[in-house]
Length: 233
Length: 235
Image 1 (cartoon, rainbow over the protein chains, first blue to last red):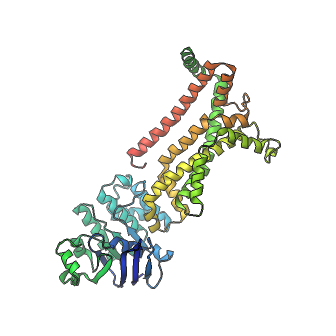
Image 2 (cartoon, helix red, strand yellow):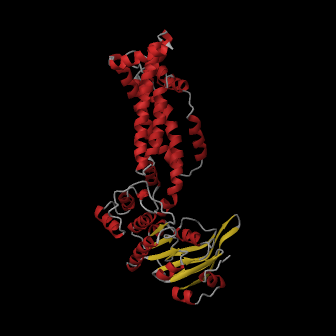
Image 3 (cartoon, chains in turn orange, blue):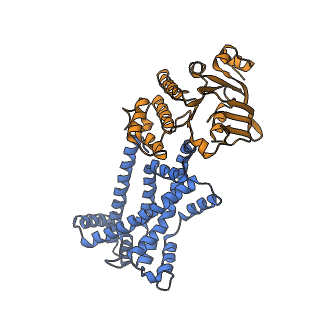
């Protein structure tokens, strides 16, 4: 699927540019964290590269291919607020397995074991705790067998224990060779997980660098202020 | 007041006495209305869900039309079906006039817009919630529609119940196409109309009470089902 090539990407609403001329090529495997203050355009960028939104102008290519159905099917996305179906935990996984290779009970149980949700398999998904719901959403995304996993602040409103479990699942996915792009506000999480960082501010891409370089020596004033915990306007 | 107490007394004696004619009338009422509701659900649920999910030119017009058709006067439907299936009508050769099948057809036409229009609303609300996730999964429209219908099944039960309420309570259409023939097309509502016109108000009211009990029983069953689903977070 890689590289991801984004060229002159703009997204406008009523002439206001919410994303302004983004140019970036992401070629390295591992986890890319998309960071920046509120309103930077992080979630918007994620939706655009997944094909949920169409850009006002510019181009997005995955391994030289447009965002056609075939390309999109090789990606999966986890949203900030998990969208779980009104079914049992197991049926949520069955739903995506059926859309793919077909229902496979053994595979579903393996997925639930891996996500630590096997014991709750017969519970209604919507009665799970926030952390469990997000883990199920992640497990469901992984069940589609994606090559690229996109996550929009998956740990935004869950406790540290649940965050740790999600991060563990992400690290396992990275070890299996998945490319992960993760929107996060959590600087600590980005330090723990990210291999490289895309830093955005006011709809512009200010930095794209290896995580170590970014954290040790941020180049832009906004990134420096953001890492120092200052309010970035 | 005398009429009311007579009516309740008569209603219970009819029920307890398991009057054969009454059971036949109740049976036919349920057969006609439930058949019509099942047929309407088979057409209306996917049609409503399709309108909620798929964007195409004229979709808004269809939605408005369906909403308007919810208020279809039963006598007009009865008249149209009568014209279609009477001997001189285009479907006259089927010989359906004054048969339970004709009554089922008329009630299906009455109930389908109700189920379709309400389904569109229910499914549209759920679709707003699921839309991004489904688009992310690149699901084809038929899969989206079936998933939305399944996940809103408890709300759609109430929708179907509204259709059943319309079918079991209407008289205008079934009396025109059924003719209220004893032992053939007589249902609760047409029997009530007949007894009222004959001046036997107590019997008419008694039949009305039984009709209400039937409607109450069906509603209670669906309410129970929905409540249990809600407590399990499936609704």
